[in-house]
Length: 357
Image (tube, rainbow, N blue to C red):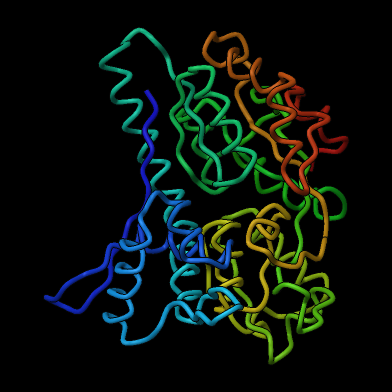
């Protein structure tokens, strides 16, 4: 059983008429793409008359236009309309992890009632694009899964307690590898746990399209004209950010917005794309999806950690088989900045890392 939860919001004065933004935003997105209200209306299955009334009703509510139309030049969105679209994308980016985790819990509750004999694989992992693709594959192949979105440290701690079967974590390739790995080894043991490769991905700086402020690297984060948006404490990307600053001898207090955080890569990208900040750090896929300029910094390996003893458990084995399939590799490789040559490969800790701290 597959459950999908989506954020929905309306807007209006207290106690007054309200506008359901779902239909309005779909229409505005269509105008943005086609330059025509008539085409946008057809695209969302509305009559032109209904679409016109919806837009005019919203404009009356806001007291400002949403669409600028002129003879011979089509229809364009006003600044207010763009702000509404970006508000919706920020809401979706921020709430998606919570809604997807809740949907997974509800799915599992239903599955326990409908098929009580089936065991679900419990996955704790940060909200990311590769994990989302794998979840789609699991649903497509009807593999029961219980997913909870947590940062990397919380995930491996959960694995150590026996609260999950697979724990997502990411480790930078190169100079920061030993430092990152040391944090995870508080909970992972070479004689108890192993790793399955998910992907190699690229982390870098997000800035506005065409890089108008000419950001070149980490050293620019001290500039007074740049507002940074960070990830929460405990996330792998937050740790990476702190290591990058330390390497450049930049104190956290010198970065404007260092304490402003968003939960996911997508939420950071949406925050910057909406003009709320100028720069952040995350994976290339998020930058691409929100139309941002991307400045590569380094590559990292994303793994699932699991107990060696779990390798032969049927429900875990089924997921690992799916992970190593050509379909899963192709799905991950299609993501910008992701590489899937090693996807599905299982290694002991000592094999994955030549020198364990």
